[in-house]
Image 1 (cartoon, rainbow, N blue to C red):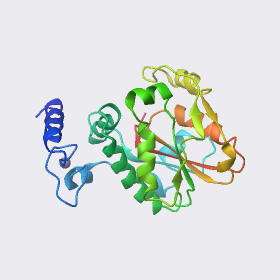
Image 2: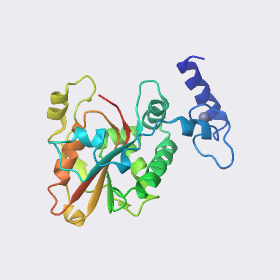
Image 3: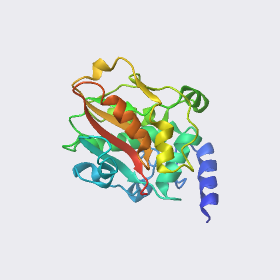
Length: 234
Ligand SMILES: [Zn+2]
């Protein structure tokens, strides 16, 4: 079956049987949610969370002084992770973000590099975009994560000032120019002295996270880590 047809079939099944796997459309067992055990097992986890020097950390070398960095899943074209993130961002399937966030949070809570996290901060969407989508997908992921970690979500501290054009089809430098001055902090003092985990949905060049991270590091005594749900190898 073609990818398109199988996605279409899963969507249609989901419409009539909401308790079906969001990837393969199979009816879920009572102990399963969002994904069936087979599809959950097939997702490619990075397992970067226990190794301080890892490919996500490397992205920020010399760009952002981080305590730790990780991603939950590998993102590949046409893969399960891409389908799930597409469902979350463009089809309003918030339950996917909450579920994957929960899995990710559980993993980070048992990692020595992440279990000291005090506050989880989502990368903000521009208010206009958030209004159109109805929610910020990174915030949904953060809430899932926080439910499994000894940390709380803070979504009001970091915010976006101006609307930037889409990041796709831009070079790394253009992406950086596009985002470097668009984030701002308000009431940052409440994060002072805390271990802050900055969260995005997908990491590619790291430009957005770098811009956000630089702003957060203006807060005195902050310890900054970065986590994204998926990692797209450049
Ligand atoms: Zn499945």
